Image (tube, rainbow, N blue to C red):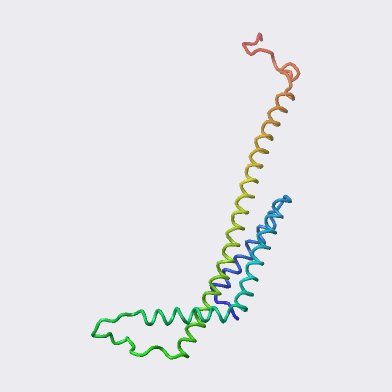
Length: 172
């Protein structure tokens, strides 16, 4: 099955996000959280594909019922519109509509699973960035304190620099 352009873009974004996130992982907890997201996503994706294969006939029967209920549920007030049909759709038409509906539902579930995986990766990426920002702020603050302390302890007195101790008029 070929992917539509939208699906290709979505899949490319998902893979790029995962790769970007993979490069930013630093701690054991980060790696475990990332692995858990990928594992759960893959398990849910595979489970949906397996359910689609095993429950296809049941899903098809349900889709047939929904389509027939929707068709017979129309109450038309006379005069009937030009597009209205007196007879129910043919079994072939109902079967085609049901197959299309089941396939669309399956693809929507797969997209939702992938989107959930992307959302979880975004949350993990946000958490990592916030942690890194806090760490950088603490490091900047500590570096500033260390620099100030060094400058205070490493000052050369005015006497050692050969400068007069007080400023004022000279006796020349």
